[in-house]
Image (tube, rainbow over all chains, first blue to last red; front, side, top):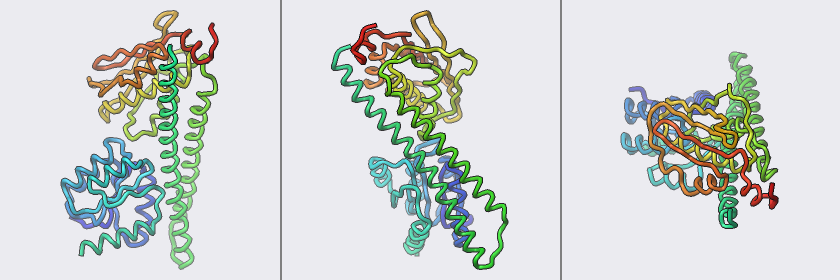
Length: 125
Length: 226
């Protein structure tokens, strides 16, 4: 099992890849999954291996809230940040009830992500 | 059609207009998010260059191509938004079935649960004298209900034909048998009633039968009789 800093689950492939590249330039290791099932599968196969997860709500195969629920069943402690262009207040409430750490609207600054990663690293120690 | 039905349909129409515009704004947000990250990456490369670090020039080309593609995607989205906005220009008009279907498929394409969809391209254009906005509403609601129930890997096929001189039939057909969840709901039934449309559902398909003309709808929305 290889430890990574951030697992990105987002069907906007260009967004996920570009974010991964920018984070990599800052020494942050990332893994991108482009649908809900592959994201859940990655967490199943690598429990506890990601410091935090960035999860989009709009996924082609299932709702982001379903993915969040599955991830939290497998790994209750991993912080999951919802990062979406589609979120409503109702979505935010559902995500928070399911254990999401934060609900962030796109576009999101790289500084915000590095800050939440630093915070998540601190909580792990 | 009584005033109560007209008021109900108008209210639902406003909700429909709002929800479609929300989905369009979300799509635009995603486009801006990609452009924003790409611009950020270009800035990162600039900083690397200032530090004397080398990188592949193809990265710059990839970034400019990506931005151009996303701008085109944005224009396409705005074209659909514009087309949809103009669907309320005329309460009643000759409305093309394939054009209305195409726009509804594109608009539902912004939703998370949309599925692969093919519209029969071989059929000749058919028009009906109706409310383009309400017809768009009914087709959009139908697509949403079918997409929510369909398997991810399944494809939705849409056919349309003149059933008889007075009616047009739209068929939504999918592969695996499924039970549509809570469809038609009351809102959809109200819109269908206003349009004089009939909804028939089987395990593998859904039929919408729409009249070529609807005198009571025309009179209610325009105050004129044909």
